[in-house]
Image (tube, rainbow over all chains, first blue to last red; front, side, top):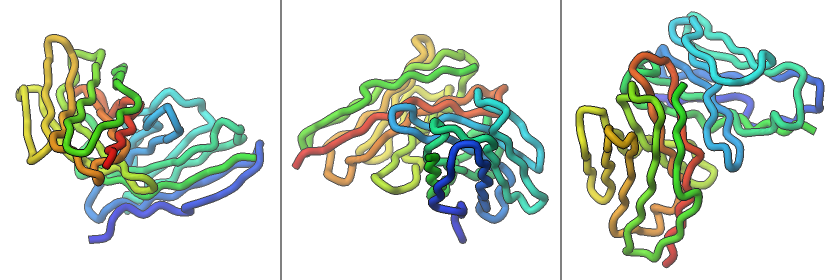
Length: 115
Length: 112
């Protein structure tokens, strides 16, 4: 069975631009969650989507947004990019809602560099 | 919300020795505690998890213990091998919250 796929894998943007990242979950998984990974900060929860609904959101500014489509694919968008947004963005899919005890299956991530 | 603290941030051990990573959590409603391993350049993968109704769980050379009263849980790796070198993340999730809070990670280096 195919794993979690994230696109693009690498991208470079300049301050003020916006970016859209895509995540295709494992077939049958309805939960997709997003994380920002930076050195020393670990994995910071951005938000989770289940059945096209955002179930929870982490402590990130409104510039970070997302959505989920009926086929469970998810996108996240960051507007007005700042230098501090440079990070590896990971998405993960699971059968269950977060808060359950389902294993998360991570994608390889999208590495964003903001210049 | 849940706050997870993880220590140490780096850990260097001699091959064959044991490694212990400790995490504390703040929300007493948390009931699920997974551990993820991320090798260099790879995606995080679940290695073991424990639920709040269990005090200890083992899987070959790794074990996790949970102390609900003190609100801390630990990962134990015995007979460490070079392939254990990775970043390890603990996490906690309350049953009433659709969120998984991760610790900052521990970089484990196993010296040959």
